[in-house]
Image 1: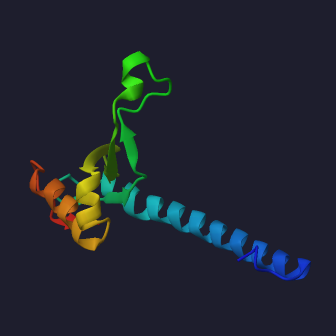
Image 2: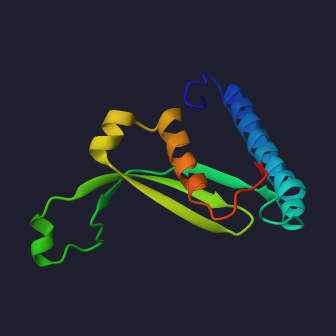
Length: 131
């Protein structure tokens, strides 16, 4: 949006709008942490669970900063990354998805819900309330 501004005044308005949005998002996140997560700490794990999840960037594996010798010529596998974080425990779970599956299924709602479902099915203790 800022690039499409035709004048300095318009750019400043866009910039102020973006800064305001970022400040509101930061404030909302702090409120969320204070109200939901801190309150959740008082509850038993079977009563309440708070999860965050998101898709990450695609990665090439093996992932080496410096290619050692013969590995330079090996083809690398491209994978997608999906992460679920248990906010109460601060623990993360990762799902690695092969490129061929990403092409077939994508990173849409069906894939997202499938991985979330898989995570929840494997929980030893099922929560009564999930946020």
